[in-house]
Length: 194
View 1: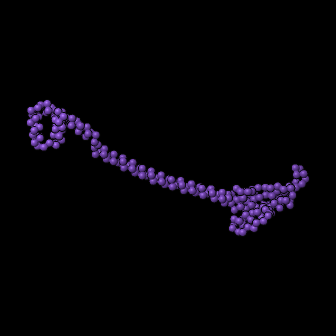
View 2: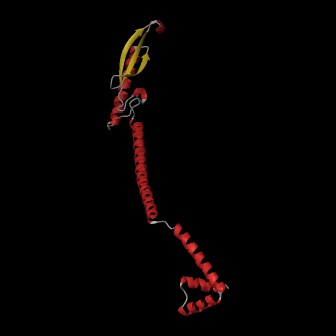
């Protein structure tokens, strides 16, 4: 019976030679059970073909699927470009921030440094007052105001004598001149004084 199924399947597939088809036709008329099996195989094939055809998309469904794939591909390409541009912009911003921060620390900043020196590094000492009071024991108190290039007072140093105040102002002025000379690339003479 197994070979009969194979012969019937080959017949339905169109794979039998003309002599084999004639021999099978003679058997089908002589054997009604074999004819019933052939009819059952034809019905099963019809059901399978109907099922497979129902699973195949029609032209409109195939077009919708193709458009969905194309849109997804374009979206992915655009997101990839945006990602590359964003990474580049973030890297550039990080480099710029690092450069500005490094420059700020290396070259000085407006409110940093000793005695409020600005980026150029200039401060100007001035003896600004002589006050006497009960807390001073009758002696004068001299103040040296240190200002930046805009005239803003950035520090005040108090001294009990005028000579000390003048000496501090002169020392600070010499220090500023040396510092500016170094920044301008001029030679610096080293001495044992401040």
